[in-house]
Length: 210
Image (cartoon, rainbow, N blue to C red; front, side, top):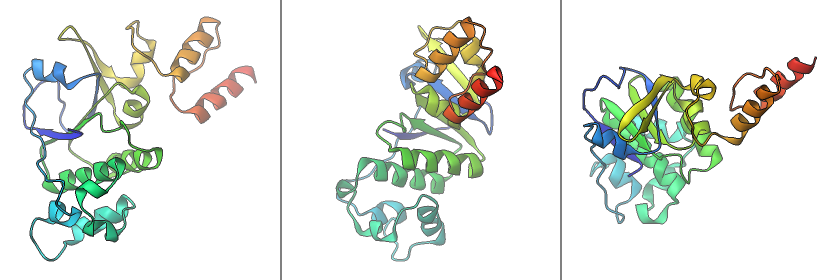
């Protein structure tokens, strides 16, 4: 399930913050967090799924479709006939309208194409004001979306802090290639800042040799 909700009150979830969880929701479940999924039938049309049995679509749905660059013609298609990337966006639109306390993106980035990934990140950072939990092993996606990172090991939290500080820590993770490059360069006194943005890295390299 790519999108879930939770109303579990926990000291690890800071209110109105985007929190990244590295690796797996099982760690959160073992920590006592309960999740609620989304029910639907593949034979439903997108309109049926988003708007129930109402004949008239409300402005919220139509505006969200525009925000995520989805055509209105999509509404008449059955769930089983749309791509996985597009249906993930539909799931997100449904979730945003349902206004739950904590929105959980469970490997939402997996299989989502680059275009929609950027649209989702930009929209949520601009508009979503509640607590969001993103679970993934892609630190680039988590870094672009979230402010804080939680890392579990053997059922215990071994890291919980600003996501950018993880790159300076001694915790052994599967770091993105760009971070591995920066770590290696800094061993040779390059003094590069940690970033997952290629343009920012090039600027930093230029500044360091100027």
